[in-house]
Length: 269
Length: 105
Image (cartoon, rainbow over all chains, first blue to last red; front, side, top):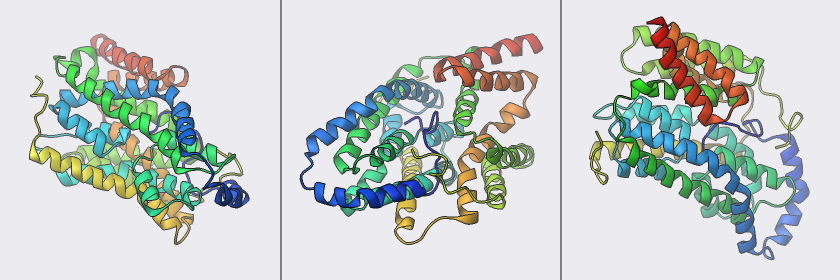
């Protein structure tokens, strides 16, 4: 749920290798789907994701603390975690939080921060082929970096069943809500966050997320453009529109770069 | 500090709902799209750049345009992140911010 941290495969379009795997395993999937025991699949997913809960605890407590600093109640924090369930965008929302909240800006910012989900959804779509509509559109609600990566990894060696996928999702989802709420309950007691450098914590979290997203040359120009535009926007524009400006500048430069290589050539999840 | 545990403000709820709708849209859009077409070329390049660009934009004023202490702490955070897990990295960055602010006034 940490929503970036260390992401396994490149978050980009449906890789060729995955498509190949897909056709290779499609028939296996179709013949197996009725015989697979859902319970064991679900348990496999739960076991696979559980070690990652350490990261969820850390991010969750931190997020809850920061949300409390901005005046969000534990129930509001829990609701946000349950309804949005996307760490990076929640951190950003709390960072730009005002009272009363700027509803449109928060929605637009969440959209931009979570745009990588579009690519992740595109990559996982071929493996949800045998799923029902409800399973696919319900399952996608829970798609986060970690379970997405594990789901793709699974699909390379076995058909991706809804049971396995939801097994990956459940511990992440419950853990994220529990830990963020806990952080919000206790974070409200901290006074004067700047004394402990906590006003720098957002920046530190995002810098850590960024080092996990860094793709060398491909990242340099878009991120550089984003930084320049954001600093300029910060000086010239009101509020936090500098974030949208920086995001758009980065997207524009990204569009001008050579398109992403057909992944799968370089990594297969 | 610390509002009632069960407090819920209607405007806060509306903001959370807006975030939830936007986020769910990003989660289903790629799936929906791939069932119809393929994302490639400039659109793929733009989408690939967006998450990092947005995160960079968020931290840029603090990291580059606030003061030498903040810029130094940001640099140290990036260096720590190469070797350490999240929590020690963030703790180190915060401590560096406190220390450098004291040193540099």
